[in-house]
Length: 167
Image 1: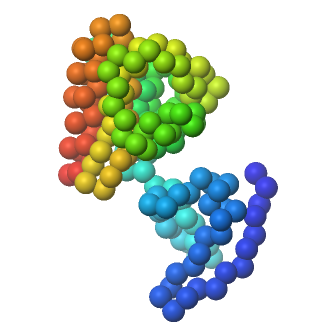
Image 2: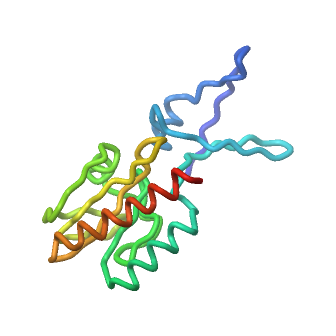
């Protein structure tokens, strides 16, 4: 990844502007949450998601996948967090990013989406994960018995929402 360098002043309230070129490159949008960390010499800004690296939630989802033998993709707003169909960390295609950011919910929709380099075609049941802080991601459950798959996805989504609102 090519490095982009800017020199910026800090205003009297301690703010700096992240240049548009950097926001475009890293797909940082208005309303996104950033994590700020520092060491002795550097300040690091990272896009933040309550779902990323939340091992408790991932373990809950893994349990449902194994116990109910379902095909599932758990996403944040842009990437796969956990799945037994595609690779964890795969980027969502633009169509799917739009669905997640709009908190779209679908029952028994036959469609194709690309996750990283994997094209997944089938019956999608998409349930948004919405917390007190806004849209966090989606639970996607696949299956021919759409009603059952949708209900399982809804249950998983609600459990995740409860966990995120508590922590």
